[in-house]
Length: 154
Length: 154
Length: 154
Image: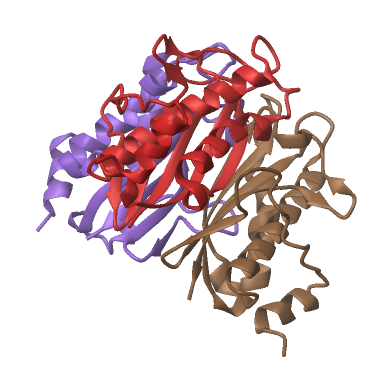
């Protein structure tokens, strides 16, 4: 039987990606106590990395889509950390979001809302998190957004 | 009776801002165990966002003032998380500070000292924290500094 | 008798630096529960700060060396936090790595691998961590890399 969170993901018409494997000598997440520290997830979809820079070649709408992709990847990693059962996630605790930005782009929060809104849609009140939304002059592979996260296990 | 930390804040001639409400679908802080994860607080005062870029239109002194404003906002959020009683804060654990900087500005630590010094003035030894001070090419609303924090509750 | 982790550090031909003192009103680490939150460690060696920007005057190999220097400093701080006994480190939990980068440099992960690889060499499986690798347009003192960390004590 699908978990209630999994059911909601289906109802939203979303599909979790495979939990992306890290590209190097680190791991996608570490569980310490009941906290799950999840590695920075870069924006990517079935077509590969979602590349772009806000304020240059990438508009707000595209940025929101990129942030949603990061959030889905975080959920996929959280699912793995929870032994496959997303109902064991007690809370999304904190996101730190880096938006690939030109020096004159100042709408990082609106971009990162793509991730925040999606997590609340998926987890309900348990999805409401603390967050920081900042910019970076470049990101791995040229992606538009990278987000790491701390989740709490029940 | 005012708490001893509140008394110190008054003696320093400071006034805590109202704990700023988040601008989107997230929350100002999440408590997990005895840790409080506080969202990135942007520099703002009674006149609104404190905008500027270090190395360009904003000098070190102004940067220090901006970092102080972030610290005050963090304390306001910590107070809310502690049910209004700042004496329940056992420790300021960690700050991550982002300074809106040109590529040739390298005094991020001196800017962030505005926040660190203020927290030690307010909390005494409990205010001594670990921190990271880095730069960002831009920040939400064009503010000069954004700082998130982890505080520990007694 | 040297601890087994200390023995491995020696066998790798490495020497831990003195745990660098912070340059301001903060502390190198804070222990909360069994987590150690370590301040951002800038790249430096016996000759002082390792300055450079990836994509400009600093190549990948030099970036890897800078990241290694940050990792060694993190280990030195973790040792201090563990009362001098690195065998009390149960896990390297999370690194957040900032790479001083031009806007067109996108190999931050390869740079940060210098730190990740070294931690796994030193701690074995306990050294496998979650991480975020992003860029910054500038860093304190002009260093090439800054990395903060969360370690878990046994």
